[in-house]
Every structure is written in C-alpha cells, then in structure tokens.
Amino acid sequence: MLGGGNIDPWSSEQSTDYDRMIEQFGLTPMDLGSLPNPGMLHRRGIVFAHRDMDVITDSITKGDPFGVLTGLMPSGRMHLGHSMVIEQVRWFQEHGADVTVAVADLEALATRGTSLSDGRETALREYVLNYAALGLESDKTNVYFQSSRPEVQRLAFTLGKRTNLSELDAIYGFGGDTNLAHVQAPLVQVGDIVHPQLEDFGGLRPIVVPVGVDQDPHLRLTRDITQKTNWFNVKKRKSGGLTVALSVQEDNQAEMGVSHTGRIDMDSRAKLVGNIVDSIAELGFSDIKSNPKHGTIEIPGATLGDRSKLRVMLLQIERNLGGLGLMPPCSTYHRFAVGMTGDKMSSSKPESTIFMDDDIESMERKVKRAISGGQSTVEEHRRLGGDVSKDVAYQYLQFFFENDDKALAEIKFEYESGRMLAGEVKQICMDRAAEWLSDLKRRRNQMEDTVADFLAADAI
Ligand code: TRP
Image 1 (cartoon, helix red, strand yellow):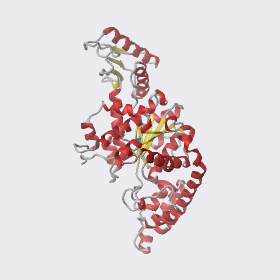
Image 2 (tube, rainbow, N blue to C red):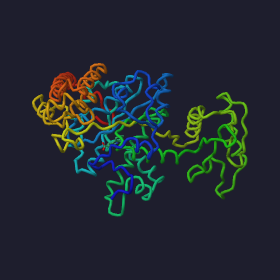
Image 3 (cartoon, rainbow, N blue to C red):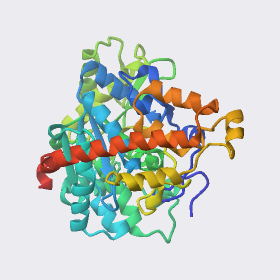
Image 4 (cartoon, rainbow, N blue to C red):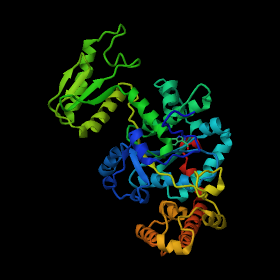
C-alpha cells in the first residue's frame, strides 16, 4: 500500500526513526535556545522538530497576534497520547495564541462510521472537558465541528483544485482502491488548518499546528496547496537580495494585468507593480528594480530575514485584490511515548495507554505490567543498572507525570547506576500518576459546566 518512506497517518504502525524523518521530510530540528520559557516537552526534546516555528517565536517576542490550531477525532476515549498536543496548545495559549479546535466529525463519519451526533457527544464529554481540565481557557478557545462550518468545507473544495490524485498518492500512498472518504478527509483537514486565517476567523496571522509526526503528510499537503494559491512569490535573487515574482493563475488574470486574450495589459500591469514597489518602499527599502513585463521586482538589499515581512505585506495586497492570501501553516512535531505494552498507544488497545478517566487501580495494573528496563536479577541490576530507553515507567514520568527536571534527572541517575530498582521506578510512576489523575478528575468536576463556553457560535 505505502510507497517507500511514506508515513500513513491512519496506520497503527509507528515509525520512530526521528532523525530520518527530519531529513526525509525537510523538518527543522527544534532549537531550544530560541524558545521563550520552553515547556516541559520542549526541554526534554520530546517536541523535536518544526516547520517555520521562527515565525511563531517572532510573533511571541513582538506580541503580534498568532493562532494555534488542533483537531480531534471524536471516536474513542482520550488518553495520554492525546494530552501531549493539548499541553503544547496550552503553552502557545500562555504565550499569546488564540486557540481553534477542529472536531473532525466529518472525518470520523467518513473513515470510522461515527454518527455526527455520537461524534458531538464524544467530543464534548471526552475531549473538550479534559482540555478544560488540562488548563485551556474558554475565552481564548473556539471549538467547532467540521460538519457545521461551511467555510471549512468550501475551502476543502476550492483548494482541492490545487492538487490531484497523483500528489495524494505520492504523499499518502493512495491507489486506485483507496476509499474516497480517505481522499476527502485530508482536504477537509487542509480547510481546518487554513481557515483561521480567513477574515471571519481572525484574519491574516501565523497559525501553528502542533502534531505527532504521523500527521505531517497533512501539513505538507496544506503548505504545498497554500503556496500554489499565492499570487506573489518571494525568491532568492541570483546575485543577492530577494525577488518578488507575480504568479499569474486562472482566477487572477485581470488583477495580474493579463487581458482575456492572454496578452499583458501594460497599463494595469504597471499599476500593480507600482503599488507593490510603493509598499516595499514603505518597508524601508530604497533600491528596488521592477520589470513590469516579466512581473518581477528585485530588492538587492533585502536579506532572507526580510522575507517573512515581505510575504505578509504581499499577502495583504493579494487579499485587497480579492485573493485568499494564505500563509503556509507553521508546525511542531513531537515524539510518541511508547505504548505500555510495547507497541503503539491506541484507544482500541486499553492496556497500551492510560485514559484520562482511568481509575487508580487500572492505572496501577498497567504500570505494574509495563515493560521495564531493569535487569533480570537484582545482582545484575546493581551491577549493570537500568535502561531508561526501554523503561515505560521512566518514560511516562518524563513525558507526563514528573514536571520537575531535577527530580527526573535524579531518578535517571539512580536507576542507571543500579541503586534504584525497576520496581521502585514503577512505584514513583504510580504515585505521580495517581496524583496527576486525581488532580485532573477534580478539575474535570469543577469545569463540567463550562464546556459550552469553549464552543464557537456555530457549534452551539
Ligand atoms: N486527522 C486528525 C486525527 O486523526 C484530526 C484532525 C482533523 C486534525 N483536522 C485536524 C489534526 C487539523 C490537526 C489539525 O486525529
């Protein structure tokens, strides 16, 4: 089914070769030093890569508006794996982001047969309530349903014009036997990711999408499509600086100064290029060489660092002329915590993870049975030490339950030196997890009546 090297976002198999993924998909390794107040998942290298995160850190530093978008599949119960994204959403929110949450009820209907009303029920009771308990704030959060936001569906259709089956095949490994629900779902997801930039949903601003690396195909598709819609491109100029180039497309010919006979209408072309030159000058550049006929504007003195402000200015011009003016989404990628049974965490395998509403006994049973990195006898363990890279209890402390870096480092040190036994790490994990789960439960009870406050107007 899958071509070489593809990741299938619907698969239950899991690839964990993160360096290969960075290389193969052209992700940028996360640079901790560039983040203001890195969160726990950043500090521990769990959020390991990104695309265009610098655009977001720039907004954070300048106090400029930006948004964070995430989506949820309203089938199955919420578990620890899902909470990692919300932890990141919370971090972005604390740093000034507005939050949009897509309930993928159309995707669940099409790919899992979940009815819209069951999807709604699951989304609110199982997910949004836990998001509230995990610290998302209702006044900065908008939860919507794919099925009741026509703008998202409209985008899925109009942006669908910018791709084709061969591209979907190359990205997802689709073939002739692929169910059409699986073709439509990613296009709706493109609509989810892009639509917060529409004027009615907050307007032009960077949107970051934190995901597990298995969702990168959707982001690659979205970035590719948004770039194809852009009316102006900013490229590196061969002899230094940057070049702005017009992109004449089927639906922007008149605005681009191309008459219906296909010839360039020099008057309107010159006016358009003149407008752009003026806007570039307003950004502070004085050396600007334009060639209206070729549709290029060269800025020899611009650096790569000027690219993003030029792009935003051009997107605004595009919007004023009637175009969509879409930015490619920014994204971050996190590693997966191992499943407790050794394979992937999944709601359909309850022993593989801890659910947000598991009782303490079930949690303890799962931790006790989980794979450990201890040696087979105490003598050997004292001599060789434990292996944290195999130890589920240690990893769950690292990913979820132990906030304190020092305490975590100490456990690692004691365990690796053989002084601490696997059973002792499990006990610490159970104690921390018990605290975490009961805290969450208490907050769920407190927040129960606030779920409706998280809903967007079209979701009520
Ligand atoms: N496809 C995602 C999943 O399987 C759900 C989703 C829909 C999503 N739209 C999204 C995730 C937008 C991130 C961004 O869980």
